[in-house]
Image 1 (tube, each protein chain N blue to C red):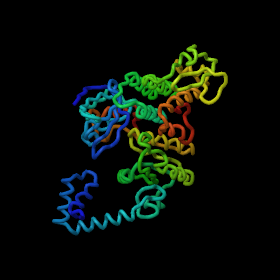
Image 2: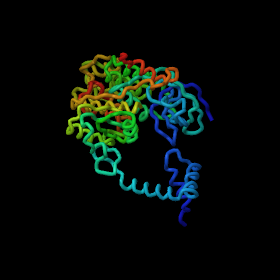
Image 3: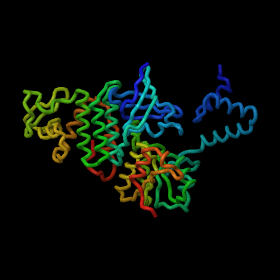
Image 4: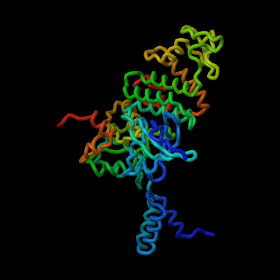
Length: 243
Length: 198
């Protein structure tokens, strides 16, 4: 049996379990994604009631024997990131990526920090949601160790030129090509992504396409429900938030 | 060998929320020992309810008719539509307010991470009502959970694309509540969305 005390982390997702408990997918900075049972967390008198929610910086303690741990302590470690409207959907998209792409028990402190940044940015509303998501996606893939080299091409190892065209091969990298086509991106978009630049209206669509190609490759056929939500909602969108 | 009727009853009672082995036994003994009539009435009522109660075709609330009492009433305004997650929410609002509009019951909430999307909540049916009934305002009364808020955003976009006004239930300090004992998220929200005094 192992015990862990006061670990910073996020609730990625939670589901009701039995009468009053929750099954929590917790993403801890030093422990990665773990499954925890929060006994009695839904009962009226529980101090954890309403606390085991996404987007709240938390400090958790748990004990564990086998696959699932048992939550023994939970406290807020900061203020809830107040995500509203489409920003909330974007936050759920981030959580769905964590759930689908990260293995359990695989620590990813840099991804954890990127979560903090993307939630803060989405709550603040100062930067376009699309840019915040692109930056998170890149941090996620880099943290997993599967991001291609955004600085040098995969053929001769030359620096990526803004005016060049490159074919993205997820397991290989960016291969210079002569002509555009499916899976071909401009060097300018690749460079902008690597730099995390925030004001790139003309390459925004291309950057989204590029990250999507990479993420889809690692999802291996699984679909993202939040992506469908962001793409398919009716009415006038506030723009630029799509994943 | 068929199962013992007493054990069957205990097992059946345990489908109720909050009923474990001990309460099931207590309930079964109460009916068998002291209240056989009550037990028969319960059995009949359950059988009838399970057979006859279905969803209202306009608001998805439970009813034994094609349309529920509220949808059929001509005393209720069609201009204001209150969208809630569950039939229990309709009962709560009916008991607490003088609301005289109509309802739409989602019977759930958007929860993409659990695979629950707009198509599971009858939102196409809601869209038809919005197009046909001359609704002027939607009161969004989904829960204040992450999923309830995600659903609220979807409803808002549905309404805005049809130029329908939306409002959301206010969130804040409970009446008679003490600030000191209010949870921190609620208090922060109440503080940032404070209102001018009237």
